[in-house]
Image (tube, rainbow, N blue to C red; front, side, top):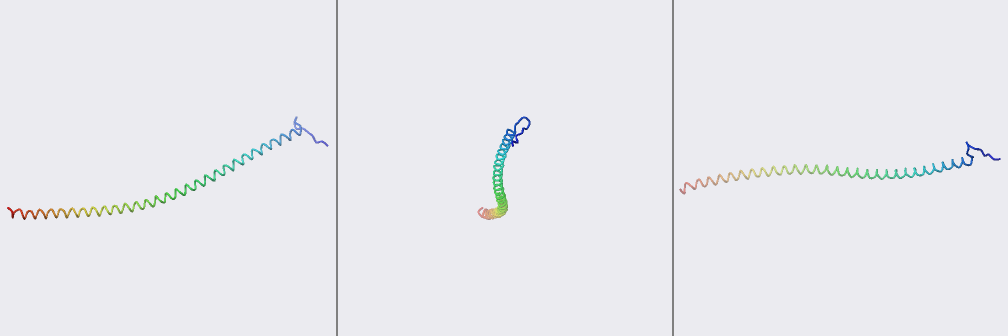
Length: 116
């Protein structure tokens, strides 16, 4: 028995060959798309790993800057305190100098009339 038939003007064998060819082409397209999806997935994983690494580095940098800010504030406060002490010492030295100058003037005032 022969079950040959035709679809439109095409013979069954030609029709089957065409369907097989189309299925083969579709299979190849699926393989290509599957490969591309795998490549994109790997690229995405790499990008996510890089992003995570950069975020961790950013967090460390933020922490270091925060610590530096605290240290800088402490250093600034210490510098302000040191400057205040220095100004007080300068004022005391200036007062001592004025007192010494007054004492020297007084001594000269006492000596000057005696010499005259």
